[in-house]
Image (tube, rainbow, N blue to C red; front, side):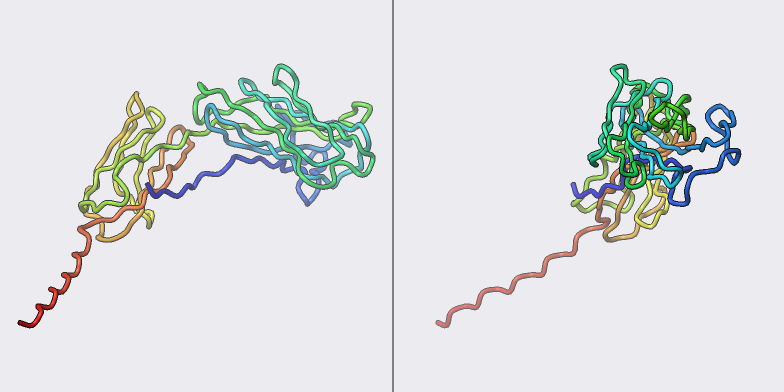
Length: 265
């Protein structure tokens, strides 16, 4: 089938340490609404990860007070999730994940202005039985100097996303009628909407307990090439399938070949 993907990796940026600099103490609250101590800065961000999938929490380079060798950036995973990787490849840092997956950290191994360039990724895994649309509490970011004194802290909002639905019918590459039936699978109970290439609604259905869904257009689709895509929505989160290229209507008839010339008698 000719399909084009519209999915993307989940990425979080700690909003408090973007290029504009850290948020000053008192301008925002840390995890649980607590105000950080004077001199401390607040880190914050959000990410959406489907059940049973990984997502990348990406902390930006900072422009706050200089921290040297031995300073440490730590992420504590939210309840139910695990940190599974620290994939930074830049020199000058050592990444490590705790054996229980609850925390992971980068430690500066160079005294040359650490944390000032690049981004610092942490891989989070959400359990397969997590309920889409729920938020996992307890994600904490903390940046400390070599003596363990916190210089920035905050949290990240982790939302359980929705798995992408599958659009298995109609078939691509074959002529279809003007009202082709659509079907596939999605998260049980999700509302599924099939749209055409212009974003117009074609048909809708609700995924059953086994995840299956099907629907048919209530109006004729225009003849010619088109694209269909299914979008599933549940509990405030949504996800889309790959697109299917379709052709509506009968193919143009082939031109009749000329009869071979009769040889003279």
